[in-house]
Image (cartoon, rainbow, N blue to C red):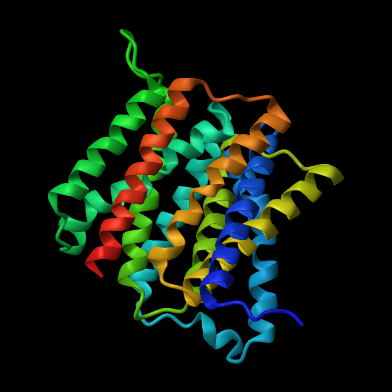
Length: 290
């Protein structure tokens, strides 16, 4: 007889699976950057992101009414920020190894803490400001600016982290207005439209059968990972689920080594540990405050 699992265990399992699926999706997107520009990847991948969402809408009560937004302006802002975040993630993978890019993108919760005071009116104590400083110190260790400055391409994952933090601020402001399915659906629409607009500008390349398979896999994994993350947050408090997000960096190191032979150097590992440590400390302070 199987033991009944607690909601916390179920939630943790969902979040771990979400991180693994998203990292695999990121790896597929990085592979596709050798033949397609980011706009094309957003568009062709976006065609398949709706498959899991539409399937869930067909199964769950309410049908299309689940897409009704009670805060259309906020939903559109969140969708645009989500779409921009996605395209800058892909751009980051053009220039950086998978694990390096994700380590910098993990500055997002630290940036969210810095933005919480001016944008959400939340009180941020000195300990969390210290964690913000430590997190950015970790960033400097990872990029190690020389006398010639920081290579320009590091701006892409850094901007991704900022957009992700702004997206999370927008999500917090929607928590009492829209359903998770609605928020995700409009974000996917925005990503598809961004891809559709930019593809003609930079030129389009028609995928072959193998590439269509990669796009389908990336799109479906993208949706499933988001839906699993949302389910995790429905099963257990967000604060207890957040640490499991950082396992994505472990997946990224393993996948990056398996596919491209990437091995993070000591400085990048040290910087990544500082970023993750700062994020976990901020989480600890949030849980104590609650």
